[in-house]
Amino acid sequence: MIVTFLRWLQWTDFFSTLRDWLYSYPVILSLHMVAMSVFGGLILVTDLRLLGVGARTYSISDVIDGLRNLKRVGFVFVTTCGVLLFGCKADEYGFNPWFRLKLVFFVLLVIHHWVFRGSVYSNAAALDSAPQIPGRAKLAGGLSLLLWFGVICAGRGIGYLHPSLEHGITDPRPDSTQVMPPAATEPLALNRASSAR
Amino acid sequence: MIANPLNSSPLAFPILEVVHIVGFISAVGSAALVDFRLLGFILPRRSPAEIWRATLLWTIVGLTLVVFSGLSLFSSDPDMYYLNPAFDLKIAVMIAAIVFYYTAVRKAVAKAVQTGASRLVAWISLLLWVLVLFGGIFIAFVQSYAPEA
Image (tube, rainbow over all chains, first blue to last red; front, side):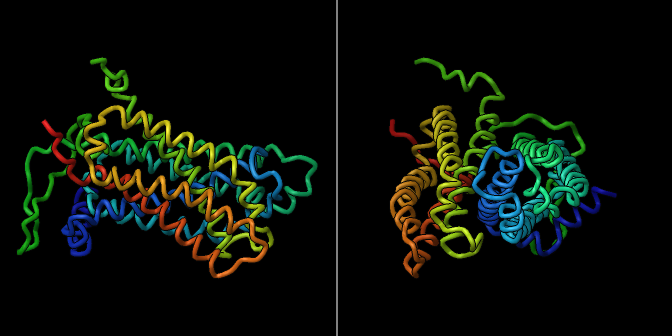
């Protein structure tokens, strides 16, 4: 059923048109990097501040509240690019173990956000008035850094695994020349050369 | 010819890539904060000079990581890289971005009052960083020239 959904998504008119344009994939991937730099930079600054390592001349509320809007914009930007990249090759991504690991990290990040929101991220003023940074805030910053680092590693890993292609299925659209890659249910082969760089 | 040890381990390249990514997030992310402040998007109560000082270390740490991991990645297959038009463009724009950041942006940050000129400087700086990232991705998507025999 998942395969059916992934294939349907991949071969919708929207994602097929996107894929048809030769450079759409690298352009979206580049934009993903741009958004990642901004969003990742904001995460880094916030987490380092929570750990008491960086930006110490700024109060915690300055960093958390002052950067919140830009962080939201960055998050929407990076997620949109990510979803577009996924839709172009949904089938391939859906069966890529590194992609699945990346999803696991996202789930953990959602839990992280849910656990620490009340006591840390919506509570910046109280953190500032504490004599020193509470352990819970440091824990939130450290875990966030680790989880996002995991996202980067898993994301980079995606490019190193490719499904074994045994049979091609023709694009269901009548006037298309694209060949549909088969669903990747076979064990994946380690392959550095093709899209790794 | 001495074999490059980086090519004998299948993990060397991806690990260096992750270092490269962490490096550019730190470098470009922190530089972008200064540019965004010049544009008035963030932290209005803090002066651009203060943001510059707070991010200074992370920009340098990021640039160091990104350059050294980049040189190592380059060494794995120099012919493919320097004969690649996207790579050549990336290096040129990267040098421009770094020089521009430490001259024009630094100067704009030092000024007490933000003018239209300082906003222009911030936009140019952001554009240069964006082009570096595009150049990096496009290395994998354009053909390298054939090496001369």
